[in-house]
Image (cartoon, rainbow, N blue to C red):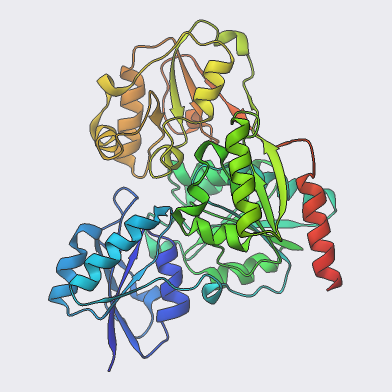
Length: 442
């Protein structure tokens, strides 16, 4: 008998798992996706052009809060959990609810969904959102470029728009962001790589994406999202750790999997974390994955004119995912504001507009910062209105993207930049080239 399946997701891993695991398997009929974490991605359809001949009407996508109702009404046999950065206990609470309504509950093995490449693959993953994958990816690309290799980055999916138009996306110049109608979150990830001359691919069908990327690359760099595992089988996996959240590497799904799979375990932010937190992470790596090379890294923040910050009342606008489902109350912008002598971080709460107020209700842990939310034109407008309303001397953008290209800012503003920094000891370049050379000889 055919098993009825619901895939729980957040517009990324869920679609990949469908494509490689369920789509062509006659044992299963996927009756629905559910969606969470990301604004406005529910109540749409995974289109027939992507779903294949077994799904002429496509596959509906519902809010996750309807999951139990759907299991009962559609007599679902199996629920496949397919999104990331979730506490282990929460995963099991969701499993318990599914099982109570009569469905089996699975998490598909990380290596089972990894596609094979004809080119070497370096994967940059993490144990939590906001550990510093993006700056690490940029550093990896620079290292490989320095070896004379042509690098193409493939980014974990963020297909929040018209899925039928996002099968394969290629970004080589800034105009491509407008052409693909990118959200702020997408721009945060793609723009810094494109600015350094790296072609970026993303989309929905990661088999097609890989084959196109291979045609342009000597090395493919997987740029992970959240704390998800790689969609491609890596020759070298780098897993990034955040000592500000020491212990999370053992308590979040699937971040612990990335800990166990790491060839290089990179402890980031050692310049701002306490020594005991760094040592706790180091201990956990050594205990659970003793074969990994351990590299420590700094995450220095800089601004172009630090004197402009001194004594100012500052509104800090931070990277959205790091602050929301990443669980961090602050980010690089807050670090820079304090480092360069801002008098006050202005709390944006009295000024929140529309959907931005809803974000703060959903994530009460947020500190005195404003996450750069922009999953729709309306939300971008709400972000712009919030910034305009805040009573402050200066706006400090702690996101990787130049937000002034996207929204009108009617106040003085500055950008914070943060890049990878080597810490004493084994460097990322030494560890990466050693692993790649060893793999090539093997």
